[in-house]
Each structure stands twice: as C-alpha cells, then as structure tokens.
Image (cartoon, rainbow, N blue to C red; front, side, top):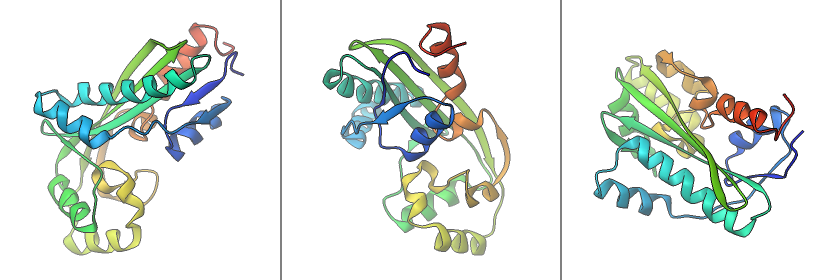
Length: 200
C-alpha cells in the first residue's frame, strides 16, 4: 500500500504488528540509543514527560533516518507519567512490584510519541495521551499476577501489558487503545493518507 518503503526505528514487536495489521509494508531497524541516559539528562533539565517522549522518538527516528535517507522512517517512544514523574521499565521483579503498588488505586497517563522522517528530515510528529486508573487490587493478586507474567511485563513501562492479563489491574481507561499500546496509529494513518503515501 505504501508508495515508499517504511522503516520502524524500533524492535517493538507490538508496534510492528499494529502497522502490519493496518496493511502497511514495514521493516524494523533497531535505533540503539541509550534511552535511560537520554531520559536522565532530560529529567535533570526539568523536561516534562510529554517532551521526554517526543525527544526520545525524535532521536530514534533521526538515527535510523541517517542510515536510510531514502525511506520513510517512523520512530516511537512511550513514557508513563505518574504525578509529573516518569516511570521506566522495571529492571527487576521487586521494582515491578514497587511500581504497581505505587500505581494501585491511582490514575496515571501514558504518552505515546511518534515522529516521521522523510529524506532525513522530520515531516510529522504526534504525542497521544491516555489516562488509566488502576483498581485497588489485593497484595495476593499482585503477587500471583507477577508470578504468572514476569519477566514478560518487564518490557513495559508500569509493569503491565493491557493486551494481556494486565487489563485486570484497571478500573477505568480514557484514551485510544493504540496509544496505550505505544503507537498513535490513527493520527499516523490519517497523515499518511493526506500526504498520499497510502491510498485514501
């Protein structure tokens, strides 16, 4: 469907699946940036979570676009904004448990940024937001949840995957499902259609 090759500047399996399911021919290339170092630097400069997500997406896109200037390159990043602070992917089971305990009964935001490059230059960007409220689950459920789902949920900010058992942790979700999965797919498809990259 695409008039130009599309490269996803990521190794995210779920983002790749979403793009392919939408009928786009896409290949994935790892960007290999030190996300935690970049995030720490931005936080030290008091950058807000939205700007952190956007900057990380931009850096990933720019790095791959420099190697593939003839292609459309899409870079994405997602951050979890909890009371103005950014939570990272948990590095251990104990850290996952601590994150989920902090989020229990609270509302947080997922910010999913996407940046599109063409011929080595940015041509489109978007940051989608969803707000999620966790229910007051018991300690025993939390421990059994992690026993069943660790280490898989370690690849997700907040230590949950909404597309699997993680959905049982929530009372309320306000926002786009694709944004929650880490890709603002509908705005992206709308832009690609408007620009003639895909048929409309």
